[in-house]
Image 1 (tube, rainbow over the protein chains, first blue to last red):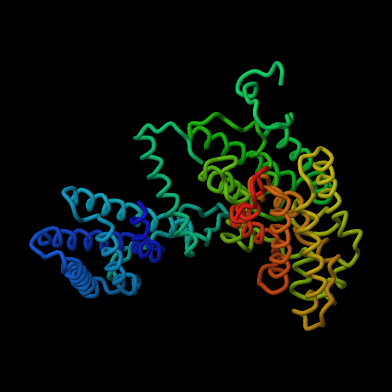
Image 2: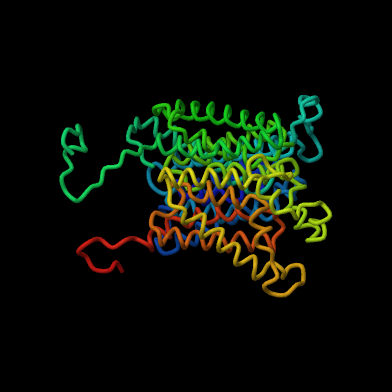
Length: 197
Length: 318
């Protein structure tokens, strides 16, 4: 769980718009799946001494490929993700060194990590934009729409958006709540009845 | 100990002193101590202040009920802690504040600052101050008071204060000034503190040291930001304006988020006084007391660790 939190930095940094959250989550999950799949396939044929170096090279190559593809197909998304897109490589390496990939149950663990990341980034993007700006932006590469809740639904109610959710503090808040919720579900499923403060 | 049933009857070691206080008793005593401030708010602001206090109370109690059900624990509305948090939170809001801000701030205070960390006794920060910080970060224009004496002094200096007729210390003391719901009347706040001290709910160490440190610091450095010399500050005006009295008497002394020992309390309160003065004099914020309490609450475990008392019969702790 704690390595998972370490890898959340780029997700929290850019998830101020819905489309950014979705894009970041999908790109992160794709990178993680591709790089971990490649490493999983070749890791048994490599000598121990160069295994880490090769893994770093594979992760960096996959991230570079995906960044080039994003620049080509969705330049505006790439511009708003900025430096946080290449940083995915660091987080993939953190996941790798934290032991998410190796071992017999590596595919399952990787799929779980990808699922969590997509859920958190989509939820964080959606919630932070609705609460912090009052809109839902689904614009990518010039296509899509921006839905303004303030003009359509909340016309008569004098609610103003809470700008704290559009600031970095809001990202940490949402991430903490989502992680607490995941832990709560885990606790229930374990039927853990001892309460620890 | 004769006749005591259960676990308490079996404890035979160490000299234990039995005290009849309980969580409920302490909490409801604090609620009684908070009533004078509500009365003063009704006297000076009328029904608007009562609407804000009532909204906050209702939200707090409903949130407490929901979180108890969500966490599958016994319902703890009657222990009074949610009532205290809601009251303190509403005391920090101006009367012009829209009600949805009161509702969301009070919900944040109880559901996230208190219950997400495990409920009463497990929160790392005073819940009311957590809610206040959330609300001021989210809706700064609606949730801060722009025409109270401290804001006027901050924006326009002493000349603005005298032209707005805030220089009457008696008015500042009894609360005949604009401001937030509960912080205007220092008389009511001190009456509440006196009740708490008389009922032996708390020792007035933190309030006295906090206010004393802030007064000395503001006296020495108070004139510097306006270009004056040392020792030209006006500590009496500074202590009687803004929320420092409310903060020192009811929020800094919270059992959960203040140090255990007397030495720890003194360190805590000195740091609070200095931080409050620094924020008031040199930052963009008008009121520094709430932020400084939130900041120092984080250091309470550290202070507790370094001010542990010596166990009888053992050497000094290293």
